[in-house]
Image (cartoon, rainbow, N blue to C red; front, side, top):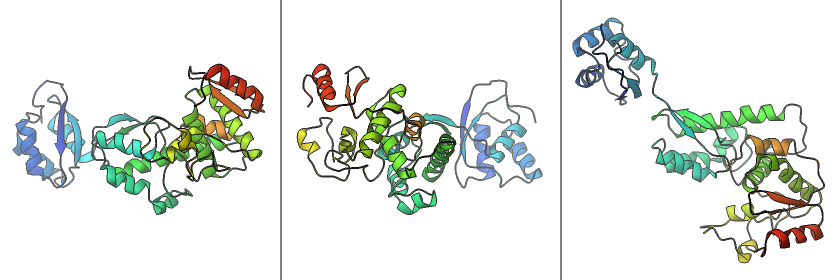
Length: 303
């Protein structure tokens, strides 16, 4: 069957769930993507594919033959859209992005992401999937659904994590690695600093010093307004590393590859402190005296 025309301009065609062959053929003819709905239906029935049309969003054009269009619809070759999930977002922020794109219902996504049993099914020891929804660019179809998106992100996490772990021994558990990586992710945006930041926190953990990480405190606050106060730093919370020793109960964000790598293979330093230079980078110190001098130099007021 010859094409309906020669125009190669993309035409978005949506097959809704439960739509029958006759309705699909009628709409294809109305949109002038095929010449005859009757011939399309006849050919589809001849091929025994009347029930094979898959629901989804498709990219078609007039220059495609009816046979090509049927093959696309029957194979489920749906149109995909690239979506980038930035590094360092919390799960709820990821849910917001997906919901804004019309890919998921936020409540459904969050219910799945916060399901301890679902986490366990992915061999994740934790109360939720926070930390394991790997930030990357994904090709997603409109009808993919929350569960499939989570499956893709967790699979990507395990692929990256397994490769990073090869040849590197660490006494830390998976949850400890991801938790610390999430803190590193939130502390610096510079890839070259991440192994140094990781070394500071690992050195402090070894000495049983409090981590004193602002991002962990922020994660434990409700309705944070962007202004971290002294009162916030003294507010009791499992995530307040100014009050509690050791790592917080779990990840505070979803770290990317470089932050995970930094924790698995950190720089070997004696650093115990760092302070922002206010240009995106940090000054690292081995002693409190040196650190206090750096604070005076780079921060007129620490708080």
